[in-house]
Image 1: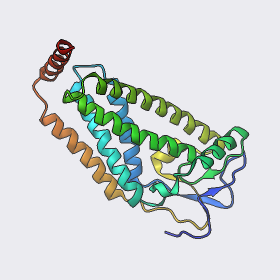
Image 2: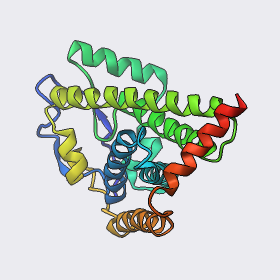
Image 3: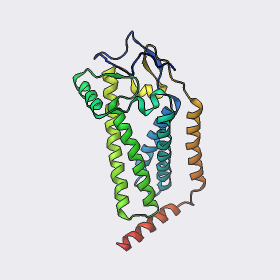
Image 4: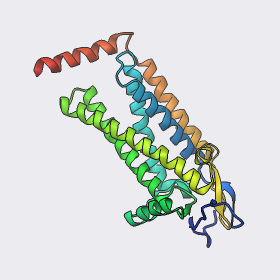
Length: 245
């Protein structure tokens, strides 16, 4: 892949980033897209099943899924293709503030990969996922009493808030730069600077990630207790904690 003169950041006019100095190219490889949409599915499913004893095993499985996906994304942030690497989009506070101010003024810089504000949301989501998963595991194993249960709920709510802010940011970024960022995360294609080649799709790795998640789901399904056992175990655990209190 060429890494010649073009910078990942170019000034963009209010009319958008596309122009004679840019051309369509593959920016998001398959592993990044698979990670993103599996995280969307897992988080939505985990949130919807969080208060249901009937769907308790599904909730736990989706939590494990999110934790495993984050571990993969952390590794891919160092070993992945150009725009997947943290070094291509993680910036300091000044860059974040400058980008936000630019958005307010309508003069925000266009970024081929994630913009600095989006990078903050991504890092927060990765960190919160690990907190949610670890505290959920502690609750499941009745470690730490109510403290971990409260932490689990607080981290999940914080994660929902960050997701909401991220969605708003995607909508604003799509409008400001005249590009469909949701579509880009589906197709992987965005406008890239002249002189920059598309990244390699890495479809085999993406397929391996999807296969690993499906294997986890299948294993959890096979290991699932008979109907009602999971709910009974959970209820008994809560009753024991209440008795101890």
